[in-house]
Amino acid sequence: MTDGRGSELGGGRRRQGVMGFLRPALLFLLTRENAHGYSLLDGLTEFGFNPDRIDPSLLYRTLREMEESGWVSSYLGEESRGPQRRVYQLKPEGKTFLAELIVGLRQRRDEIDILLQTYDQKNK
Image (cartoon, rainbow, N blue to C red; front, side, top):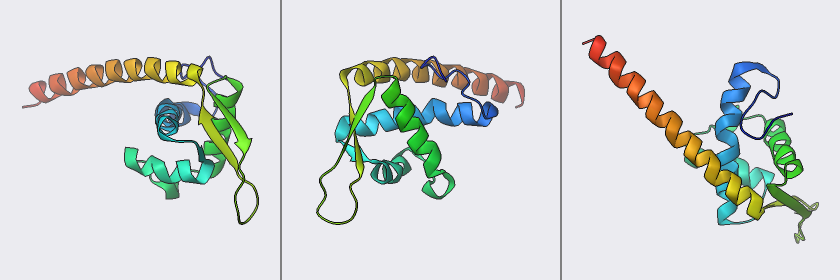
């Protein structure tokens, strides 16, 4: 489990890095509209994710964890064809948490920029 701020969920460093960006991307997509999992998977391409390289089980596990944390809720959608799909919607707590994540991402971006600039200056 996680403290909600990207602490280790298991699976090593790579998963933590993906989760650190997957959560805010999903929450942001849900600010636009309620959506089912595969729609969200497609929407992640906007942020550089390759849908062929994201395991849908990771996406659904993340959505369940975000629901357990109180950031999103879900319901079975009323669709005209095929089986019912679970539709996810952002809760006010999720919007607040997204804002906190964005602050952290901006800080991390600034730290990375400084490191890259320092590296480039040293290796000229």
